[in-house]
Length: 115
Image (cartoon, rainbow, N blue to C red; front, side):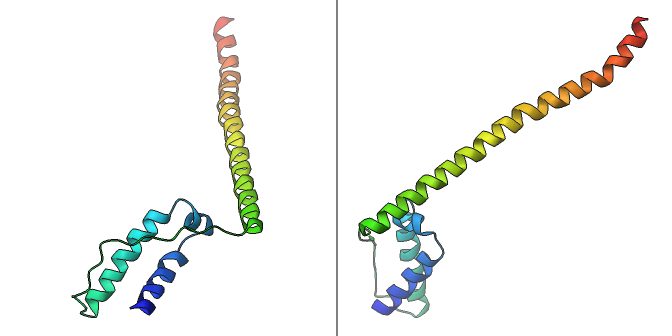
């Protein structure tokens, strides 16, 4: 049973990022692991096993790892901020440039009709 549980846990955690495992994805990991374990136990006809709850232990990484993780998270946020700012500039500049181009195209027509 222990080997099966470890195998399922490795399978479920292996599909996720380290940040997700340590932070936001814990509930999803618990749910997915419990479901996968129940499916495997049903497949091998171990129907007398029943588990209603699976809870991951809280993990406190060593200070060096925590500092690196914090720095990585900070850099990811800074990168995303830079990307968002670039899109804001793009979304402002491109429509304005298209409007000026369209206005410049229509200007000779207006002059023709005015003369």
